[in-house]
Every structure is written in structure tokens, then in C-alpha cells.
Length: 121
Image 1 (tube, rainbow, N blue to C red):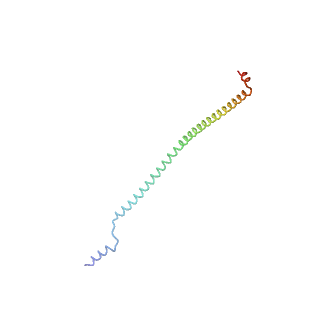
Image 2 (spheres, rainbow, N blue to C red):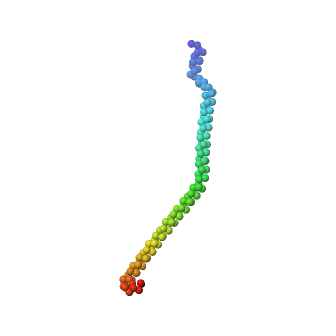
Image 3 (cartoon, one colour):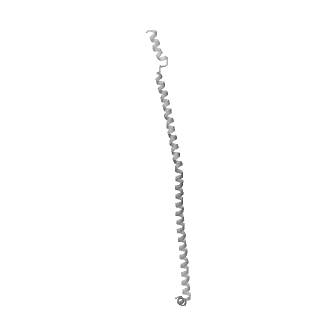
């Protein structure tokens, strides 16, 4: 074996391996593409959030208007229920008053007897 052969063989293991520059460029390009994809995804997400925010801002007045209408209907319904309850209470009070007057009339009729009955005719 010659000395030249030993240098070539030992050099393979002692010196750093030769790497093609195209490999480094491809790695750098992939990193750049990865960063760009992340940036695009972030921008898309921000755009979606912005669109949702604008949609909600447009919806809020409509929602408030519908809530106002629902509240008006609820108030009208409660007012009708209160009026019905008031009418029922008044009817019951009138019924009790008429019943009391009728009982009073019957008591009067019993106490006065037929004379009162004849005079009423």
C-alpha cells in the first residue's frame, strides 16, 4: 500500500463529509416555505375572526330590535293577563255583593212576612 492510498482512506473518516450546497439551499427554502405557510394560516385565521366580528356587529342592532319587540309582546301579554285577573276579581266581588244583598232580602222577607211580600207586588 502506498502512502497516497492511506491518506485518501484516512481522509474519508477524519475530514468532514462534503455536502452539496444544493442540500443547504433546499433546507433553507423548506424553512422559508414553512414560515410562509404559518404566516398565511395566521392571516387567514385573523381574517376569519375579523369577518365574524363584523358579522356580529351587524347582527347586534337586529338582535336588539328583535329583543325590543319580544319585550313589547311580553308586556302586552302580561297586561292582558292582569286585566283578566282584575275582571275576574271584580266579577267575584260583584257576585259576593249580590249574594249578600239577596241574603239580606231573604232575611227581610222572612222578618216582615207576607205584608212585605204583598207590598212588593
